[in-house]
Amino acid sequence: MTDDIAALPKAEFAFPGPLRDKLLAAVLSGAKTSTTGLLAAYEAEDEALPEVGARFAVVDSAELPVAVIETTEVRVVPIGEVDLAHAVDEGEGDTSLDTWRATHDEFFTSAPMREILGDPGFTVTDATLVVLERFRVVERLG
Image (cartoon, rainbow, N blue to C red):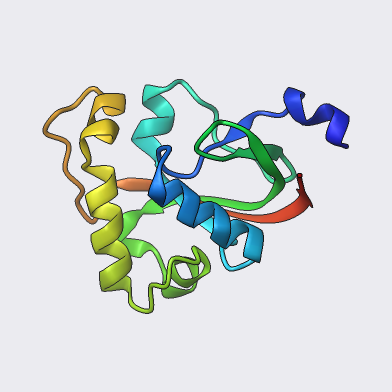
């Protein structure tokens, strides 16, 4: 499979830097098996939603592939309906929906995300649609 890595679409967890590094460590350890993205970001970047069975090359902060993941579930829901199991499975140490929501609201309203969205005043409400994705690591690289 390794020969086909370059042909896979990229999976980028957060923006390059310390948060991405932390999330990649969680993916590689098996602690992170889910992720959440803004539906509006997919739309702004004209990016198709992941589909069950799709494989992605997970890249590190240097844009180098470190693993291949396969999507096992995709749901689009209002952020106010995200359940604790999904939050815990993100592998970031959240043990309550309140802490999960606070960190996601902060990320989704960050300057880089607002730039992607083309909306400098973007805010998150309970009705904001998010893409909940579950995945499994199928190959570790390097």
